[in-house]
Length: 318
Image 1: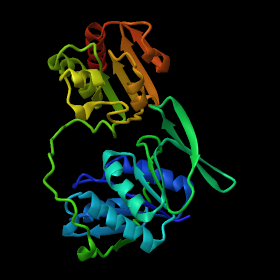
Image 2: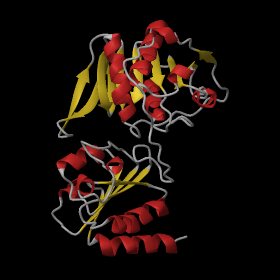
Image 3: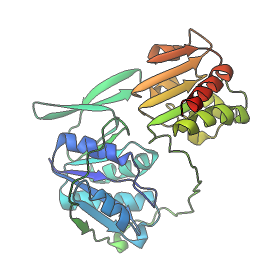
């Protein structure tokens, strides 16, 4: 099976989550090629070529991630290279662009995949449904098969000792659709890792009463651990944290190595976004909070008392 992996980037560097897509593809087949799109992408393509033969669609018309244009180019590359499997990371970018490409290709698509098995030559995929209440095993009929996988679920492969070849992809600018008009990107500088790619996520819930308290406790602990910060929907609705930090069914889906849930009760909506984390640790003063049913480690206590103690212990262990 010939696979094409879409390498997502932020305009300056490849996103770590793309490694999970690459890991998934490698678990299925050895015939893997990666694709990088954009303008001025030479350095990112060279980085991608450490893992597999790389295709570079480098053109000024792709400078901005306009969904219909990028989807058109992806579909053309899939057709030209006769890829049977197309893989990307399950991100907002993929929801917008990869879904469009799947429609153009008339292929079969599965999103948010968290596992797979090959049985009797058939690829079976596992993905959550109904807010994570069940894990469904599905198969895709038709070709190509377009799949997005959760970041952190699959390990990033080791780079090759010698980089693979890079091949330029010709972009027919005249054939690109112009149904969408690009207005701009609000790029915010954040020294903390992206919540969808971080190995450790520290999230706060309803227990935090203000933005200042959240930053003083959740933010400080995250900085001490080199972690990303997240939050429950309750804090977003209260205006304490921005929507970009919301973890859950209607927010970001994360699966870090360690998820710290501070003052989060464990509503189904929130659990859908983080319960596949490798290790979950929770602090909550309600001993009956549902979050404890999904936690590997739990501490019953007030976050306003326990988090400062935890930070103090971490500082004293330096």
